[in-house]
Image (cartoon, rainbow over all chains, first blue to last red; front, side, top):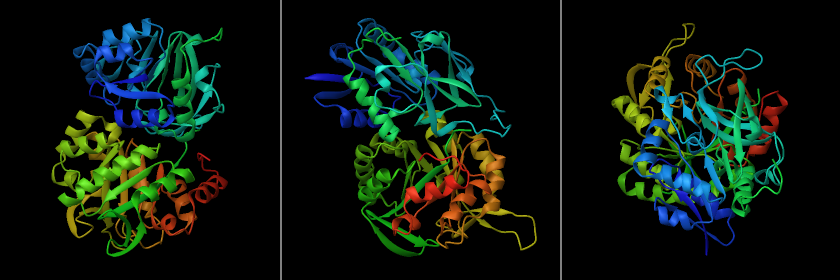
Length: 219
Length: 257
């Protein structure tokens, strides 16, 4: 049986992610695991995560998940990072006084700041919490069947600033333009929570579960 | 600004059934929590809040199973509150599939619990629930006090100061309930909602008193709330979530339609 491995490093919203994947996966088994062998044998790999980046990165390193991530990405299989699992793939984060991340994407994680305002000068709350529109800046198999500007559920106080604009496939405006979905070869990663984003989110997870990690000349 | 204001149906659950009290006393049965949650998910609710209002130890197991069942079928954010007193309680609810937990009385008796919980699980999943009553006299500037035990025990804590303190301790969101209004259908206490929403950096959910759709809209436009919570207007079929969203959108409020 084909499997989707959800990497467990003690910091994830693993139940939500695995239940949502089970809901959309047809003939794939969803396994929540930290076992490198099980992850190595999976056809799809998901790196979730919630909480503070320092604790997440500490656990990722302590459990050797950093090497597992690197190895599985290098193998060419479809790989999805979600929320803090997305931020962990960047070079570094400003959270917790500055934390080095996995560097799979050329990008930095920045703080929204205490005095964030919208176009009209109105104060914006931080965390950015709730349903916001995601502009699909590039086509990607992940977006199949999802309307441009569909709303996804976000919860975050730090946002990604991508180093390479050609890797950005989705943007959201919240006081500033945030890069909320990145893609490079077989890796995709999103800031929002597809597992909590109702129809649009489930469609995205279904697209990922059905994706072979190839881009057919796109991007 | 494109971030949508949220509509959150609330399930007050007693012994495995959705109930709704008027001023927390007169209880009406509104069905099985799993079925009710699924209905709101299908209607396009933005989140669901599950409040365990009995919270005795035997019922806690029932709650965990219900949260598991809801989380397996409802793919929108789920907050669980009621009887959350320790980090172990939080861990169990998050493992069962809750995305956030509501901390109420425990925060009042031990504010450091909020700090510890936020450090351990992240502020994004820590909602501090504030139950308050107006204690100022007519004509005086508004003043509200925190009450515990279903609105029976005053604490002497000022609600606005308390909300600010809780966000400093790591609360990622404030669920604000006016005990004067809860169950009355007279609308939110807009004054305290606005006072707290303007004073804190995190999102505020207005709760207590919704009787019609204008009340929901007022919570956002006049109360400056980021989300509005309601129970009985949805439970007993007076209004659906799509009706509420269409009504609010027609008043220029950004909604997820």
